[in-house]
Image (tube, rainbow, N blue to C red):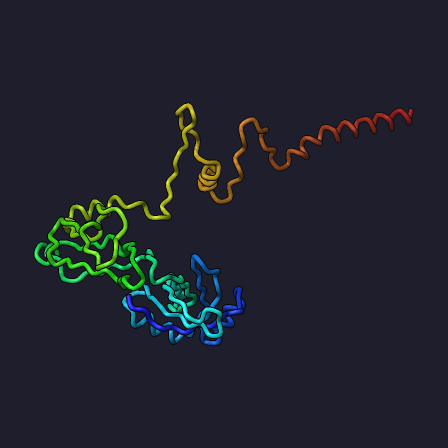
Length: 280
């Protein structure tokens, strides 16, 4: 991988408010770190960084950082990670990993295909891209931006495994050699499509009353909330709540007055007796 020049500046603005101020000036907050150096906050120009990414096959970039007014003005670094805004896609932050020209490094490299698979062209198969990135190790100058795989001879039902991919000179592909990377699968039949649709999980919102089972295996009553809802639905508009078992019968209107009448009559009789005695 050929290194490209990139200007950088030491950054004193940190935290959330500081990074917002940096972006407002047309620069991107960044950080550089390595095994033999302490992490250092940097900032790079938005347009310059955007041009490098735009003209690169991937975001795996080897850069010659020129840090203005720094104790180490020249540094060789890999672009380790680029953070983008989820909606606008603008670059928000860049991580640089300082490397040595004589030391091998390990990175993730994208896999790209060329040609049309024979199984797709002649047999109506479906191309399945299983792994989109491969882990490789090499000297910085030998790192590829991407790994190209020719799939023109790939027949229906065949698979290209990790161990079958030819690595560029000076590059070692890491991982289990039996892992599938690219395959051509047979298309689904109509019966398989129907079976897959029927096996799909129930749509959210479908309600089903399920009775819970007790520990002894017998079915328990529905949940308390469900029972109350059922009772409420069964009651007719205007009906009073049904009396619970053991409750006394509800008194009818006028029963109170009727119950009080005998007592009032007894009191009146006593008063009449007293008046009669006084007259005597």
